[in-house]
Length: 374
Image 1 (cartoon, helix red, strand yellow):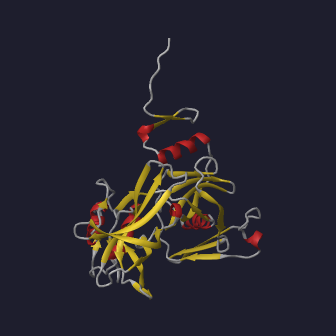
Image 2: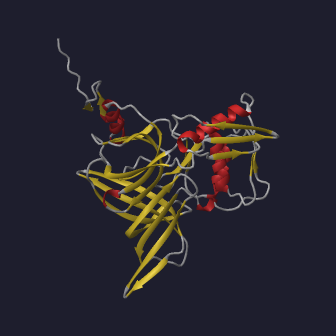
Image 3: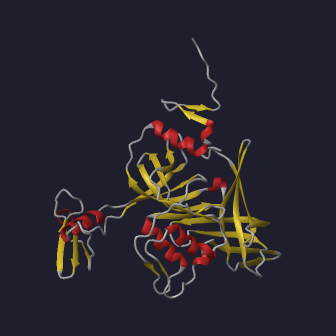
């Protein structure tokens, strides 16, 4: 299905047996939204339903049925646990507001004092151990890096916060699929999708950008033991320098641990340069696309919004076309070619064995009949 085009959508939920992970009973939705983030529980949902049983704990899954001509997609958007529902009564009608938490909620419990993960342990094994508390399926590659150091649980450490420390140590990420599957993968280096004014036009015309330069330092002071070094930006050509701003903005870092090949002065200069790399974030609303997750990279080519961006958060509204509000942060600029843009979009909306992209960027549908001429 080509999600850049119009389609009809309907939303509903089903209850799930956490023991068998089988769907049991349908729940009609009045309204709601699904929120995806890069940290913490990763997912949550706010739903409004009628006459929901409030006597016990439930697990549920939210679906979107999308129809475009003869094509129908049955897309899971969220799977998780329902907290104690609020009930509002108006005459004979009772409605319930459901606050739903992700399949990672059971991991938000304190670990035993002294819990640690050993140096040299396979990261996948450590993650599987920490994820045992969730009933959801877990998708972790077999061949994962070894941990280069011990990871020790601090006071009030939970399985979830320790899991994040393991991911940080190996520079991987975790996201939740709509069916609740916990997915562990390396951080992406290529774009999952391309959004552009010509072709894959899915972003609404109104969006906002922000560059938070106010707190960016122009003086960086570091210390290690009794040694102190200071890096300064006094360059008149730099918009963040002491000269351009007419003031010092100081950032201090104490008790620095240096690598074997870097001195304290070089460390201070590097940290100042990094601190002055001002992040550009953008907020926009687009059509729902099922294959783009938080943490993915997307390439955007609109007037005043161009580059490669990392998806920071998503809110999927259970309304027309699954309207998705998204926040992204630019990781690099990108030089576009129309052929590259077409290839990315074809890969997003069509099975790879159904098309062939010609050298000029034209789309050739498969199967291809070979014509031999003399």
